[in-house]
Length: 194
Image (cartoon, rainbow, N blue to C red; front, side, top):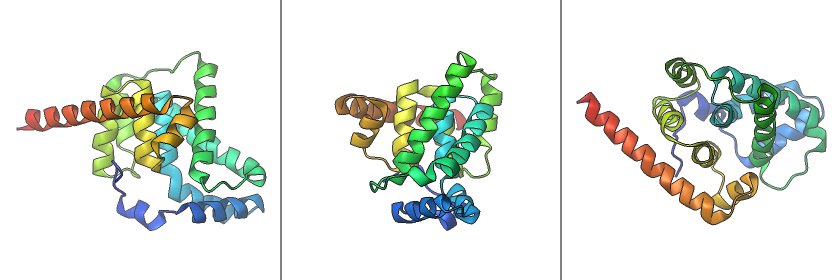
């Protein structure tokens, strides 16, 4: 079960690994419509993961755009291994890391502005916005990335461990700790509203 649900617009564009791979093959042959289809189906996942790394909505938007440019130029070299979303998210991670190196560190916006920009993205549903806001505020870098990778892309913990070069036990403990923090933050938010 995924932490995030899908919005009605995302649901229309939800793609299976087979559909994503088909898009990548079509992109490799120069099909711009396939790139648009892939963008529509994976935009939220790419943006959410980028945001979890760069912690800045402007930089996350840049990484989002750069990711699809990179997919366009690298699709011909894509090797199918049944996990096309992992390939895409590896591109995101590499571009986001480069963005951080380029800036020396993330350029922080005031927290309220950062959360407003991140959580008012029209492609995110209400549940996604609540979880994203809590994740941005409550979780450390590793925890945030692990939750986003699992929640937005459905990657298994073993795949996340490989992607982040961490032992599986570390990923599992950070994920468990992150979920407890999120649950506590969401419960506190409910109590504050009463």
